[in-house]
Image (tube, rainbow, N blue to C red; front, side):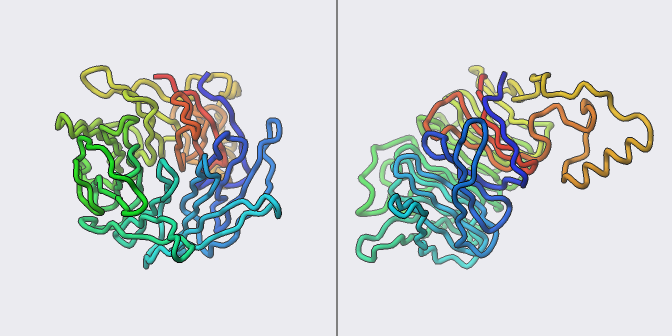
Length: 369
């Protein structure tokens, strides 16, 4: 069975992040708040509510080693939250982003000494702690970004960063900060890497927005998912750029499970696993749809009154219209609505991942190619 754990919250989960051992989770209930939940047996119990943001929280990332949380919002701000053990409260520190549009995604670097914030201001803010001023400051990656940045991902060397957005391109740029980073070893992406060096640029196959980017575990390849329902894998060492089209709805999240396995998710309600077979990337499976125990044994409504009630329930629950294979108004998939985010395991376990959805579900998966 693919599902390791499943829990349904009474609200849409639009962003989330687990702590290092997955005993706690920070999530956004489609509002300007961040809720902290702790595991209690088979349940999740709310322990804290973080309330500094004024508008919708767009992204949350929990650093597994330093135990700091970064959150960003449509209010153009980001906060770093640090837990005060003595007072048992989360204390916020405002980040000096210097952006004039909404922040869209935030991610800690592998060494957790800096983080990146994507934004609608045609830039990526690389944030680090300024010892002189005792607060978080930022430098902007701007050129050649031409539109809103939707996603970011760090290279394992803690210096390179990938970004993608509404200009239909994925890019690899240098985020080297003097005094914070040490000179990284040379890679296929380049040797000399001063700040804002463009190391690679790749276009979406059918000019779709780039919703998610991700480096392979060894950092030698970059994958990105586009709104044209495709995934593209670029390997600069060989010059190969391979795109795979999908007949499914657009993907919005992507993570690498291992060097030859990619998991994607989005509007289609089921995470999908793609694997490289030595010559091409191919769809291997849809997670959760083989778990027949989750499917209702009740027959589908046949009369017009039952059909009316079915669609009324869909409307009240914000569930999508059900297509072939649905039984009693339920999809065969575990998620019953769009998957809002797909995350890799915070402890680095390559065979585990997790997802959140508009149906309020938080699901942990075992990924098997």
